[in-house]
Length: 399
Image (cartoon, rainbow, N blue to C red; front, side, top):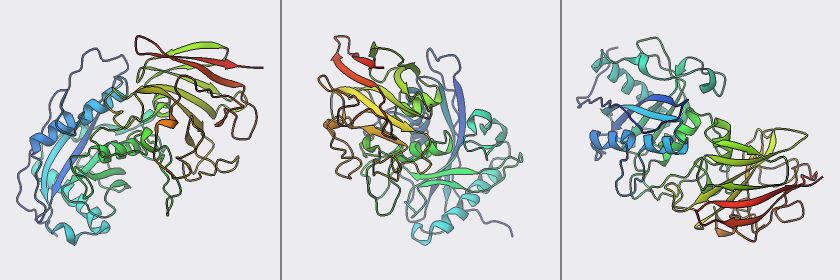
């Protein structure tokens, strides 16, 4: 059956992306973004504005503190240049209220077929593929790495990352695709968090670090990670030190002796202490500043975040019990020992951040011991704010 295409204006915007002093080993990720609107929800974001929001270098507007390209470049410490080929608007044939999740999934194929029919010269081979180190799930080799759909209306269930097959004219298929909107019903402004968070899944293979159970039992890692945040401020939270270290986007100083460590807030160095009996469990320490774009929700001016990672946990952050058998994969040690994140009290407050006078050791609450209860021997103390804006602390390893 011949598909019926609704008349619409199609524009492909592709601009060169240039950054100063990009580090060696910079990876360019080129993805596809399909803009979709509906008869009852016509687009209010122009295609040129959408391109600026996604691809602009140094672009800002009220409640958009960084473009998508600038966000990934900053958070990767210059290791990733993200570009998006923007197509739109595909006009859905039915009002937004006519679509359920299954209907929306079918419409994805219609939108991509529309691109093919109207752009026979488009170079599908230029899009990045999921291959080698960019194939985190081990099932997507040779598939498109980043295909995203941005809608003007929120379709129930559409905001997410989906395994969905479609084959381009060059024979390459999709597998994980993302769907989101510039503004959900509960947002009062443009909110790039949804697309960025879903790209964390689809491109980097990162898990959710919020509690995905129903009903929700806890706040996971709260406002401190892209994979659990979304404060709706327009400022998108950083991924968090465990993800940065895993990607090689930051240098890692392994703590193996008593030493004083100096960290620049939101810089390119974090500290790590690895369980000597199992390298899959470790602490990661980073410094953050509220003044750095991305940290609008940080509840203090500056301080240390201490993360506890247990890669053996396959349920991610669905178990907040804090017992040897039931705990998060990625948890944030909260300096005040109230465990508000695990207890669903709040998604983050000033008591979570380690400040001058705070101590983290095997004898404090929270303690620095391993999840099986064994003594870790790690102490973090003597935290100081230095005149140059950096933060120093003593890392002591006993025994």
